[in-house]
Image (tube, rainbow, N blue to C red; front, side, top):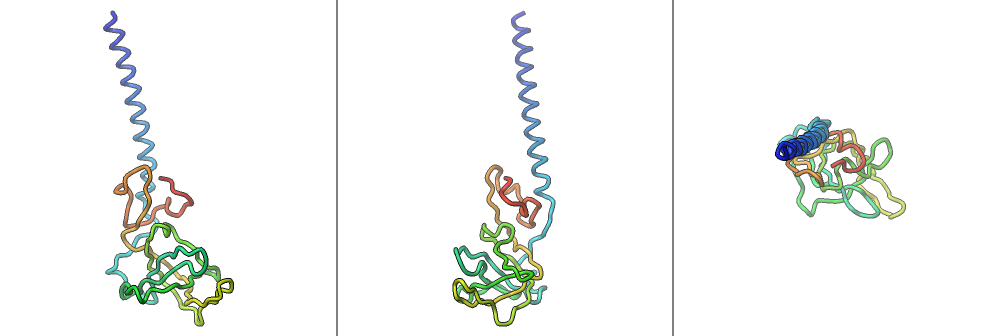
Length: 169
């Protein structure tokens, strides 16, 4: 009789453990499905030539001044001595960041050059300036992953989580 009770108790514990495990798996799957729905695809270096008036930019991490530096154009990446800070805006408002720009990602931007540049009054500097028309991340897209390993997240496109504030993972 004791053996039967022990068996029933073990079966109950095992059943509870399996249910809890399945619940965790379902939550992870529900969470990961939107990660694999593309919102904006990344461009490869071989695709750069297809875009006229394109520049390659990276975010700068200065407390003041320009938020972006130009690191290339539609031909290729620049040498280190040709990289310089630029002003990037859309609808006459400066662009301070883009999705995942804090992780040293590079962006291909379709732009129109603003003649005369922009004068930054607080710092007393002129910057080469561009009006943003469209942009694409450059492959591979870098992300910070906290809970799950990085290989679970796509490097070829941005997903809906990338456009939301905060890191959902």
